[in-house]
Image (cartoon, rainbow, N blue to C red; front, side, top):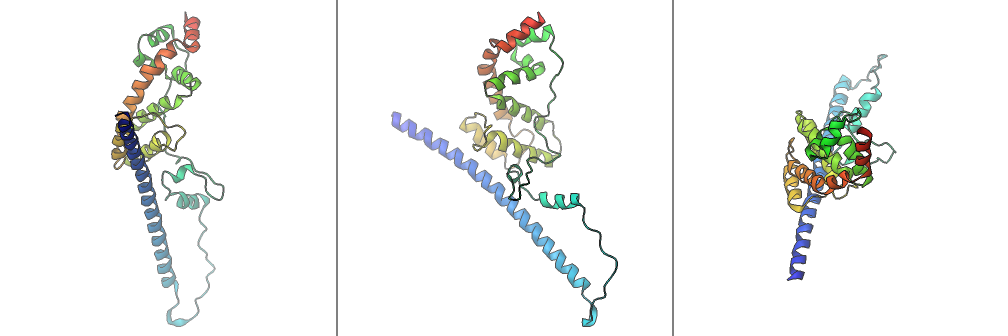
Length: 246
């Protein structure tokens, strides 16, 4: 019986890993199709322009002193990066250039309080995890960093940022960046999620919305509450704050 249950558990794990790989491959295929379509469109446009500029009657085309203005570096860069998929944005190209994020796409931009905490705030953190997450995220993230689990807070903040996004294109881009940074098994910042939640995420990623990661965010929030929060209250970081504000 023990061997049978172990085989079933391994089979379930293999299934969701295969589904994740299929999702990544689907993204690559979509990106490749987009690039090929744009290249084909560009070649067709060039052929049309060459036919239009061809001299009538077989004569030699007269030379013109007016030349078309060269494209600006910004326009060239825009044409180069427009067709990239979310996986390509985090990889180095062969010529040494690296583009990790689109300039208009950011993750985890939920503001944190920079002012020193008050006595009331520090005391409230010891009474409620919800209050800690409202006014003490910066201190709690410092503690998580000391335990090498800062990715849990970063993922939670990225999900909060996604919920506030209204632009459908940015919603899709941010969702894919979150998946790449915190859900993918290839990421060094992968958060701990069970197979059921991963299957839900893989289904949601077919058509991402601001609430694509709601179940995963709740699971990570619960993990921080039950696992990291008690150790935070007994840590030197929190005890030192209590002494400084008392």
